[in-house]
Amino acid sequence: MDLKAVAAIFVALFGTSLTSAAAESKVCFSGVCIGATLAELPPTIKWEPFQVSPKNALFRGPEFDTAIPTVLRAEPSVLKQLMAYRDGMGNIGGLNQPVISALKNVRGSCVNFQLSGTFYSESHYLTKVTVRPYPVGNGQSQEFRVSQITRFYNDAVTDAQKAQLQSSLEGQFGVRFGAGGQPYDDRNRINTTPNVYFNLGGPTTVNVSEPYATQAGTQNPDVYRALPGCTNQVKVD
Image (cartoon, rainbow, N blue to C red; front, side, top):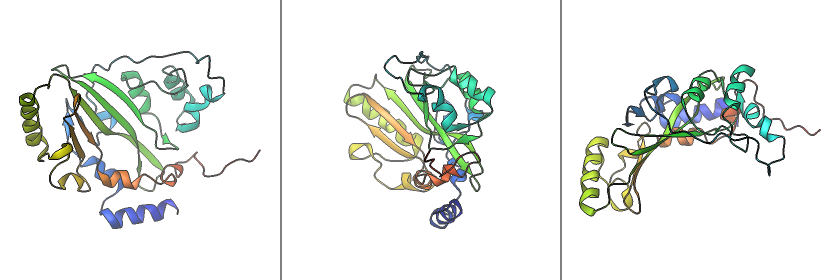
């Protein structure tokens, strides 16, 4: 199925484009919102350091030097900036301000590429942010947006603390949580509304991910391979 057919089915089912569904989301933590572009991320965030490593001694394949150029489409100078932040397996190690600045100049990805970074909120809650590329229009271009946010409320230990946190979150997100942390109703499943999950077991966490509409609309690899420079062809020799 070609990209135009995928896009047509997506609009017919959900009445929205791949990017508009993400753009309408306004569920936020510390100014970081689901569906936000890289330019909309607060520049004041102090991203936690991640490990930048030389080539792992046990990883001898050429992928260490080709992992990033194979997946991302950008000018060589931009790819070089990103490769300075590789982990031992040749992938980008995480999000920080230099990586975000470089990603703004990436035209897109040939696959559903995801990258995460962490920071501490004002109240010292560890918060994990994941971004990925969203096809724009007919897929000839892409833009990176926030697809998932997870916050860890490690000081919510007692039942009273968890109940207080749950009440505050229900007011903030406009949902009422039931057993297992899932909302009682299905408002979180509306096309342009993020999916919210409140975990009371173990470390208390809140996970907010992109709307189901955008998840469903980007499962087909052809959505990404429509980007110029990507291909469906597999070389034999």
